[in-house]
Image (cartoon, rainbow, N blue to C red; front, side):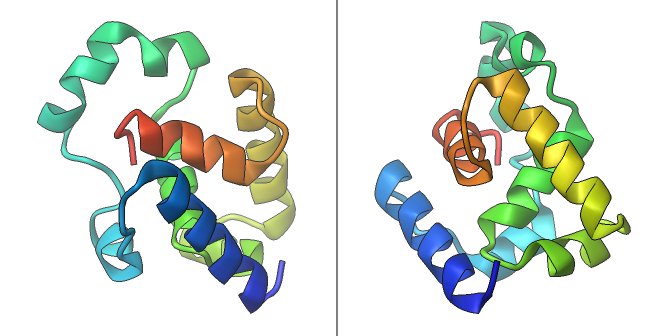
Length: 111
């Protein structure tokens, strides 16, 4: 994924969720505070999909629009491990692409 792909992904997330995603803010906090996610946790979104905090951090990093290489460095993973984990998350969520996984999490206010 190059820089333009990242910009396109961020635009797609904004259009789909109806929210402006601030890359710097997402990098600083990565996740919605736990109290903001209680409703989603109660409804079982995270539990049903089998997502953990590391998965949500990964999706939040991808939502910033950075390349997988940059995201992997920030998360202290290899690019190959990041891609493998993204594929696993996509499979668990029943989506086809990482951006669909990001949109899924953003719509549920998990990132």
